[in-house]
Image (cartoon, rainbow, N blue to C red; front, side):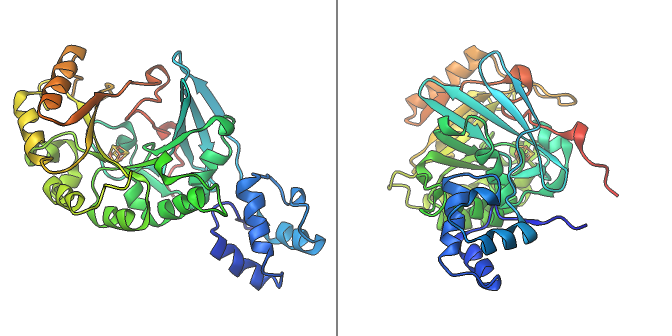
Length: 344
Ligand code: SF4
């Protein structure tokens, strides 16, 4: 038996096409969207203002597509790491991070990742599958703490720009009036700098953008992140300089600090030169050691010095608090390698 198609992840336009094919009145599409996204129902029987015929047809042809998390691990700092299955029995992780009056969910956009960054567990897992828009937003909609969420970051497993169609679709659902109706300013999407898809993201979404930088120098960045061979960082920064960031939309740079690799005065100088003329923030991130990597994290003192030097040069720089390290939920540690389905 083939699995029924999921409705979660369909845009209003797609729902309109669907109801037309089913011979249902046009307004049914909006009603379905409201049940799916505003009311977050988990089955068709709960869609009580739909006709019996509509509910029956939907039940025969589709599934809602909501999948509850399979497992949760909780850190001493309150971070929770959720394991979700995908529709095709692959696995992804999402990290929920409550803090004072904020609660952020870090979502995955792919199962594994093909970008091979030297410092990342997901990169070491390799690539298994793209997530559909429905599988991306299921991490949000099926989160037990959904009602407390204030922010979403696309910084989990995978490179969002390598799955740009589904990522843009998921952002549309999260922000459209017929969807979750969130402000795009509550969402931050991260990339290592896949330039063409990044340009599409800039044009088609109003969410914030975070670039994983990690070094201002080409050869060094190539060692850390193979993407530098294809899209050099100057090209990426040039594109950002041509973008209008004035309307509340933010660009930030993520910078993981590696001892004696990218934490020297030359790097402060290199960063200042590279980012000259662009209004941005740098977030310094502690490196969490992973197996089979020659890299070590910079000390807290070194990170503080580095932040102060950059601040003196006029670049807003913060040290991002590390969350969930003890449960492998922190930056660069997400992996479902143990659960990966063997390729046929
Ligand atoms: Fe992929 Fe991001 Fe990890 Fe690089 S850092 S391997 S892009 S998940």
